[in-house]
Length: 172
Image 1: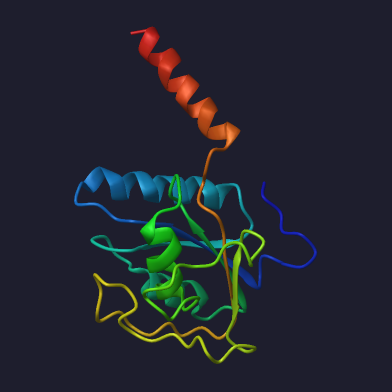
Image 2: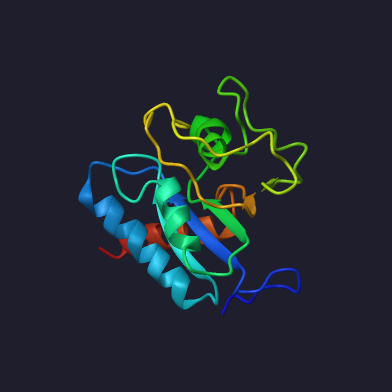
């Protein structure tokens, strides 16, 4: 079971798992299964948000996550393998962590996490139209902190999955 540390508790912290979205229906089903598996391993309220194609989009997912709760911190996890334009520019822009479309999110000055606290930083208000594919995104109705994590990356657990796939293929 994933427990929160002393700085965060499951009543005031929500988890947003972020996916790109795909036209292939199995992609959404798979991502929702991942989210359901994570919910079973976690004490946190968890929601999924998609950059495009699938619903809910990221602003809708955040609004659903915090509605009627005590959540004042959201940990946004891009479930992507590596950094790219979506994880360094588009998603931070949608989350209100980066208001300049030409500027990439600065991970060097964030200890690997993007932090954004609406109460302390009025320069990053959430506005519709953050993502170049979604010019009409709804407003995010959240005044707390958003902590944006790194993508999955070159993690030993990813290697275990690859080894498992190779082993299974050799058994066929």
